[in-house]
Length: 579
Image (cartoon, rainbow, N blue to C red; front, side, top):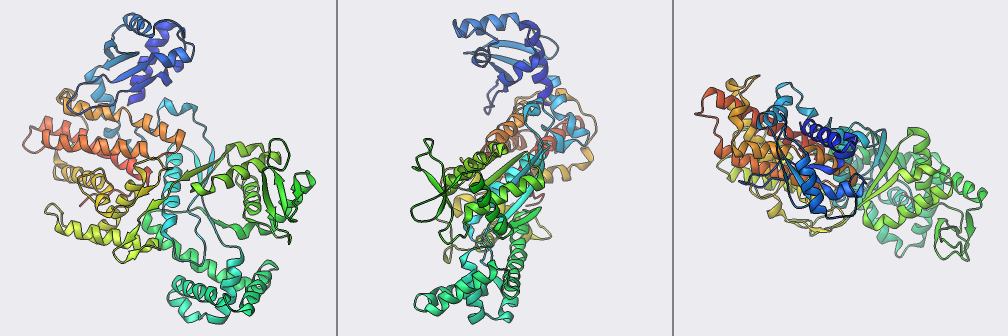
């Protein structure tokens, strides 16, 4: 694997410059490949060595590059060393490249490929709590929650694959005045029979009806206030109805999550921290952090000068708590309960200020661990609509993705016979949704495009799945040619070498993803891999080749296919093996 070559080059540099080999690992990287173009395998950045103090920061950088390149000698691992523009290029022994890169796939170590790299040694392991998805209960799952759900799932998968203990939390919006409205509305307009038949649709209808009613009916407004007061005072009738709404919602949402391949360890919610929020307000008061505004609200002064020019409201004038009060209580409770080493919140960018305030107040309260809390923001999706018009519910999007994909598969001449075409269409349609979302920076807004998203030949989730299914089919058809050993010299052609050079970058891509929590690095790596596999499929036939050549090529294809599948799973995509 890449770590073998990186370590050997770092050892060589360490001996030459009398430094620890670990000092060179950050300056070494695999060279990105270009189709049909020979490149070196690794490059050493001289500017990185200058910044780290290994080389003098003054003087001509090119002279330093050329001088160091001449001092480094070839050996059994590195067969060529050359100076580029501010970089030193290393070409490794071709036989070793083939052996070391394809070795894990003959030992059933496919899933570990790239994950044991020395690059990850300086990453902090431990317990990571990821809060994501977080829809509001008693409502059908809105399409707007798709991004938080799939981004959070990617982050949790990535952290878990790199050895972290991951806690996946869904923090439901299950408290607030809207439940007073819904409770009062259900008492007047609700029907238990309809609630059993189509739970969330019926609650949605009740919610629309009660909102129309309160526009002209003061008694209904008062009934809503009374119901919420009963909830806050834990009166059994109100709490029982609210619990029914919550359980129904979680049950319905779990069907959606199952379709997306998403699961949670904990379903929490604002309601869990209602009483604790009052305790947090008391702590703020005891610590002298709680002030009273002119309007009579409880605020925390966040201004650097302490002049109340920037405040955060944590208490209404009537003494009830707010969303941020409950978030403060939730964070403190989670730290005590789960002892996390880091906590990641995944929400849209409009909540960036909320999380800045949350972390600021936690630090002011003396919770130094708030420095290890992070908000991962994302932009908006424009134009998400189905054939029937504007989309509201995620289920509609998933249904349409499946239906469109099923239609495309039925029209394609290459589609194979399969036991459950609907299931395959579902998985491929969801892949298309995920890849469209993950191709660019998370902070960017993007325009939803059904046609572009579902193309089989573009840079899409469909292309990833098609490539994976195609190679699985190739391996199945040639199962008799698979062998534990193969001749590495039969994979010295440029097409094979280019795939192996690309695989050298896999651990770097995962490392970069772990640093900035952006899925685009992995998506673009996998799309490039698929293009290289497509070329190899044409240029390196297995059928009709001698047994030795067939065995070597099958090892190459199965190795590339394993890395593709592993990367897809981290993204939250379930690979299909027939399409």
